[in-house]
Image (cartoon, rainbow, N blue to C red; front, side, top):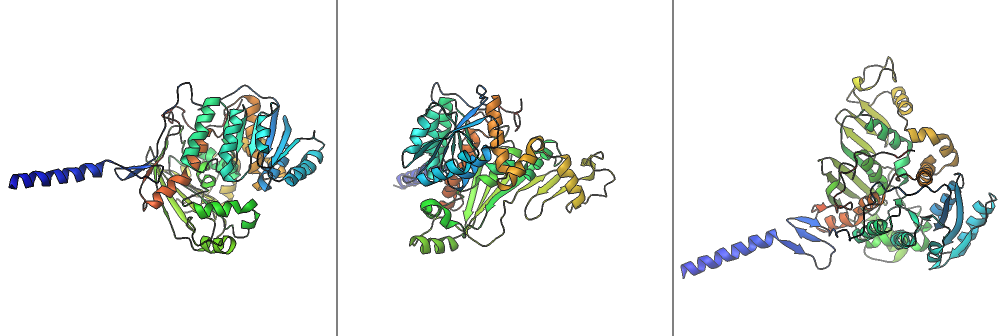
Length: 470
C-alpha cells in the first residue's frame, strides 16, 4: 500500500513538472506560453516564395503614383511629392469625394499638372489599385485599412508605401511579408523620423565609430493628443486605442534606433517585456467622446527589448497626459552618448573627436555634454550625405521640418535607380508588431514575449545598415 501510494505521489509530481515545462495554449489568444515565454507562431515560407531582403527591381525612371487617403497626411504628401522630378500623379482616392476634389484643385490644378482620376467611397481604393498605369500606391488611411490596401495593391503588381504603423497585429505583419515575397514588390512603411536631421547625423556618427559600440538605445512617442482627437475621421484613432492595450504607435521611436543597431542586418530583436499604467486620462476622454466605461490602452506604456547580441532598447508611448513632445531619442555607446530630447547634445571622449574637425577644442568632460559650439560643429562635420544632398530643398518644401520630404525623395530616388529601399517590409513588420507583442506582455503581467523572425533566418545575411546609392 505504501509503495502504491509512493508511486502515485511520484506520478503526480512528474505530471506537475511536465505540465510546467510544456506549452500552455491560450484558447483566446494568438500565441502560446512556453517556459514562461510568450511565443507567436512563425509560419514557414511557402515553396516558390522567396526573400525580399535587399530587393532591387528594374529602374522606374518616371514613377507613376496613386494616393489613397487624402486627410492631412495624404494631402500633404501629394503636395510634397509634386516637388520631386520624375513623378507622375495618376489617381487620387479618399472615402470622402470632397477631399479628392480639394487635393485636385490645390495641388494638381494649382501646379498645372495633368488632372488625376478620382475615386471615392468604400471601394474606390480597389479601382485605383487595379489600374495598369500606376507603379507606386501611397497609403495614408486609418491604421486598420493599411494591410488590406497594401496587400491588394501588391497583388495587382504595385509597389507600396504605407503610413505608420504598417500593421496592427502579428498576423497582419506576416500578411505583408508573405505578399511582398510572393509578388516581389516593395512594401515600405513611411517612417519619417528615420530622416530627421539629428537622427541622420547620429546614424552617421555611430557608423563612423564616434560612440564606440552602441549598446543601448531609447525611443518614444510622447505627444499629448488631447487637442487633436476630433481631427481623426470617424474618431478612428481613439476608438482603436479604446480597444487595444500595448504600444500601439511604436515606430517613430523604434525605427531610427533599429537602423543604428543594424536590426535584421547583423542583429535582431529577440524578446521584450512591457508594462503599462492604468488608463485614467484616456478613459476620461473616451467617456466624454464615446460614452464607454472601459479603455484598454494605458496612459503610459514602457517596453524593454533585448537583441540577439544582448543590446537593449527602451520604447515608451503616451498620448494622454500633459507633457512636452518627446521621442526620447538616445544612443548609449562604449565611447560616447547622443541625446535629442529635451536637449540636443553629445558626450564624447576627447581622443575620438578628430582635430581636423574640431581644432583646439577644450578638454571634453565625459560626465557632461560637449559645449554648444562643438556640438554645432559636429552636426556640420558629420551631416549625413543624404541630408547634404537635399537639406536646403527639404527645409523649403517642409513636412515636419523637412524630414517628410527627405523620406519621399529617398523612396522615389531608389525606385528610379533600381536600388533597395531604405526601409523594407521586414522593417515594417518588426517595428509594427510591437502593438500586439506589448499587449500580450501587459496581459500576462510583464511576461517576456519572443519576437517573430519575419526574415525567417536571414537576419544576419546583410552586414550592417546602409542607404543604397547608385
